[in-house]
Image 1 (cartoon, rainbow, N blue to C red):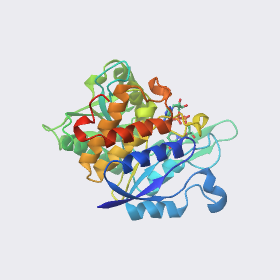
Image 2: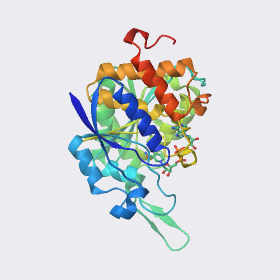
Image 3: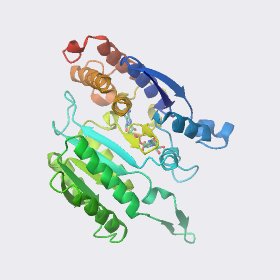
Length: 344
Ligand code: NAD
């Protein structure tokens, strides 16, 4: 079966990473029919918007997309294409696994966390205004519906993936109404999983300290949008950095797979950035498409290349470029299954 998938290369380092990812996925043994569409500042002049309706239509039609990062101007200019896309398609769950990779020198060897971030509300609604010249106000929206939906997703994910515990992360000691509602909603959903999946909660500042000192105590974390964004980068740092942190945006109508990292403009066009995070996002996509064996093969090939350490990018201590890293993964995929994990 051929899978028709929307491919958004993005900007900054996005196109180079998307190219490497596409080559690796094409070498996975699964047949893809890529529908390539563009979004971001480059399409503004032609379409009058950084997110043309045709991009959303393509994703709605194919129901699955993989995208490179897209730059958002800081403090001015258009709204984030990434956030708008998640909201427009109702991609309510942002799932970001952070798992240690053999061969990467990090503080811990056995990190295995899954961040489940609410993806549609909180401070990302873009509702802000100035109050006079010298003050500004941003509105944080938390609803029971979205909070229960993300909590249910986290528990269902835990059950489906054999995970033992869900930790709800909040600041309900200070934001008693908004974060209080998020926590209440998580508790209500947790009750339905009593005896099957453990539940606890942590205040977000303490959570950050605990994750840095004792990540092995945690399993699946469920968080409102902003804390989820920040804690994802922290978790990425525990397992080797943004270059190796994948993600999935899941909704009822569509799923969009993308790395945790952004467009890293200073590395754009230099063939320097690490393609692992986007390729691992591709592995999440293969699983979503039901292509478990291919997902396993690609993941093993990436892990094999990293463990060997000869053809990795600067952030993993190597000198290889994006495309050479991608080539090394493709070559490993060409080795028969039993040899995929063995040293070359
Ligand atoms: P960033 O994630 O782009 O980069 C931060 C730093 O992390 C880089 O300077 C680099 O040192 C490192 N890094 C990131 N990706 C890497 C990779 N693949 N390989 C090696 N090193 C890597 O974060 P930023 O600089 O804060 O944001 C840049 C732009 O990206 C902003 O416009 C931001 O809005 C956007 N952004 C987009 C997304 C998205 O598309 N989903 C996500 C986050 C940020």
